[in-house]
Amino acid sequence: METLKIAIQKSGRLSEKSLTLLERCGIRLTNGDRKLIAVSSNFPIEVIYLRDDDIPQCIADNTVDIGIVGEDVILEQSFNFKIALKLGFAKCRLSLAIPKNLPYSGLAFFQGRKIATSYPNILKSWLAQQNIQAQIVPCKGSVEITPSIGMADAIFDIVSSGSTLISNGLREVETVCRSQAILVQSENLSNDKVEILDDLVFRISSILRAENNKYVVLNAPNNKIESIIKLIPGIKSPTVVPLSDPDWSAIHSVISDDDFWSVVQSLRDSGAQGILVIPVDKMII
Ligand code: PRT
Ligand code: ZN
Image: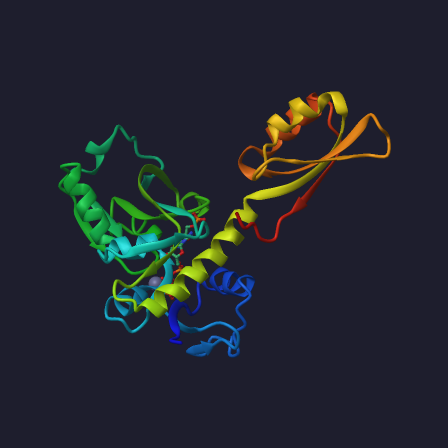
């Protein structure tokens, strides 16, 4: 059996979550201290630790087979990899921001202005789409300080909570695109490697699904069961079991996090009592 090589970020915002995800898939890494390479004793995978910017090229030249990287990095480097899975962490947006005291009346603001960024390619194609002529000032780090030192009139950078912008006297005026961590794959995988990847994707999907759902157990008077199970249809259908009180039953099901509180409210309104909510570790459907 071949070994699937996965690149993950050596140290940075994606590192911890990427490693935790592999661990939660039951993959034991024998050399997990991020030296350069880690092998697994119980899954045909080898982990290669890299700077995130190097991951796309390593996939393109088949040094590694798959990798976990931000969509922003792939987009900036103009690679067109197949996405095996969106991983739902490291969510952020790429936005334009300007000094907060300047009036902003729309995209025309950027005409003829200087914009500092470490994402010159994404910015260039977006400006072209919008028919804006602006000067791009490429900048590796500390993009947010460039307006205050007169290097640029605006910035184009990653925003997550927005606090970096606020502490630098900037305000976000346009969101250009969004990003999250994704699992991308090389186009030239052998059948063996595709099989290993399918197994990995299956395991990760069951974890991501579980993270977005809660197991719920509640008590209901028998005459309310019908209306309650409509609120929590579950995976196939809810489990209904009698309590020792002949007029009552317990109902077991799952609720998605997206509408969790509104569903709980509707359950209470429908007569549910003793609602227990339990985290789900893995959800296989
Ligand atoms: O060393 P290496 O090259 O591997 O890492 P890096 O320093 O290039 O990347 P890293 O670890 O900072 O980020 C990796 C990926 O995390 C990025 O490519 C994004 O996809 C994603 N990500 C998610 C973020 C953020 N959130 C984020 N907030 N990347 C950077 N930031 C920075 C941003 O540049 C800005 O300075 O955080 C600041 C803004 O954050 P808020 O919360 O103040 O808005
Ligand atoms: Zn980087």
